Image 1 (cartoon, rainbow, N blue to C red):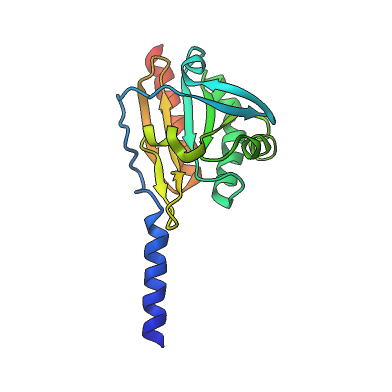
Image 2: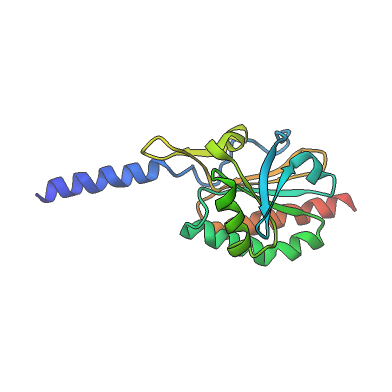
Length: 186
């Protein structure tokens, strides 16, 4: 019986790890051109059409993909980005969250967990996430966004690509990349 339990636990752990992206690695590399997109988004619960190209006209973009609204890690990450949002804005950057959810759930998440601070876009089927190579498969075959962050310069060049399951690391990494961009442009 103990052997069967160990096998079942190992199999379960293997399945759990199968949905996690490799830490520290994002497929689109620094220097690559960020794919443009337009998605339905919400900020403060108000829905609108979000264009990456238009947003980049105002400065760099911190684009972070997350697996699912209202899950523990994604809620923590949203809170952390909301707390850091004014610092990003002071550096001229805009934060955008993207998840493979529907617009109604995203609108609710933008209001309650993102605290009305930044836009969150709905990416049904994780199609945009796939163009950024920021997806993962669940054991049931569902495709979700992986926890992957990018910092994109106004010209569309990727300054940072970062994948890690730890939400805190994303804020630290993206903030450092935005600061470095600001230092270079002076």
